[in-house]
Image (cartoon, rainbow, N blue to C red):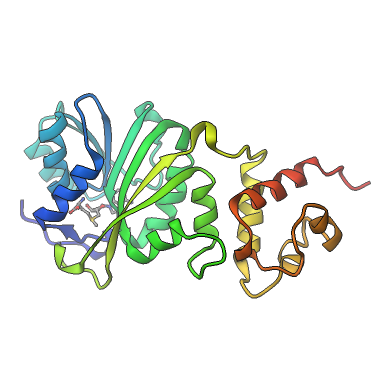
Length: 260
Ligand code: SAM
């Protein structure tokens, strides 16, 4: 397959067989799995997945790559959608989906938020991202990497860092280290969030100005006494609260009587 990598589509192709095999081993695909690959590119991973379980669904935005992929694989082996993963309705693919992908790094955060919206339909996700992004996804409260991305993803998924992949494993080589991460939906262990939009807005506000205290950042919803009543220190900053604290705050807003 001949193709000139397109930077606008974040094309850094994984070519190192060692890392490709490690990703496949982490996924442990089985015949009958509903594997959905985002951005199959030149099919380095796709080929291995099809060899293991016979059938893969994929979403690829690059028309030239789609043409190559259609030429290499019959539709029974690769069900291919020429589409933007950011706008793709993953619910249309059914349930128990196993998402895999070496994501385009320029849009990795929006893709993660988009996928999180389908959490109940997913069995798991194995993704390669910029290492720095994975560290933020998996970060614990009180650490420098902990932020909006950590809270939003950990509210829906168990996040497990798997291994680092160096730039030399790709063509062209990216400037940064990459990391493979596994996300497993919390399902019935997920906290009950009464209003997902409100939860997202509150978390975004808490981390919007990292130096400000919660008394300031959460002022649209609570005064200092209101925070204290929920056992939250108004003088603390957003990075000190855990996911459960954010859920408690957002759900409490829903229970507040409307102002007269
Ligand atoms: N999976 C291949 C590999 O590991 O070598 C390619 C990885 S490359 C980092 C990202 C792939 O995602 C490319 O094939 C690119 O064309 C595709 N892509 C970029 N933006 C996309 C989008 N919005 N929707 C779907 N695919 C996209």
